[in-house]
Image (cartoon, rainbow, N blue to C red; front, top):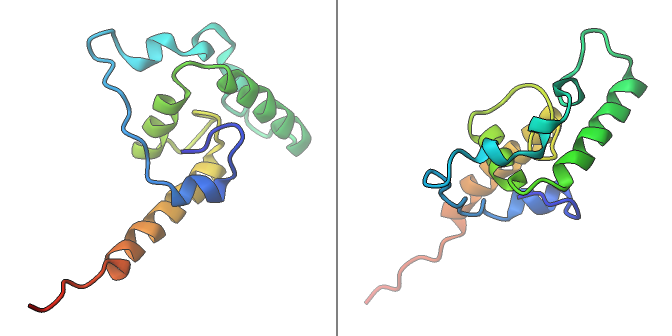
Length: 119
């Protein structure tokens, strides 16, 4: 899971955490900080210039960094997978990298498992 201080590589090699079940308290998105912000901050308008996109994404990530449900949001976006927008502090491109690295890591785990000793 990529926390504000982690790199994409760190997030890819760590198994995803168990996301707490919020069903009893309501859906996780009810607590999301972004519900109080303009949705346009998290999704690109058509034909957005690169510099504007980067600035908007950084502003969205700052909102995510202070959100109490950032981890749940990120896992939602990774499990769906959400193809657009900033979710859980990651852009769509960053989420694709995390998913690719997770899949690669999962594929390598069975090969790295020790063989049972013959008895």
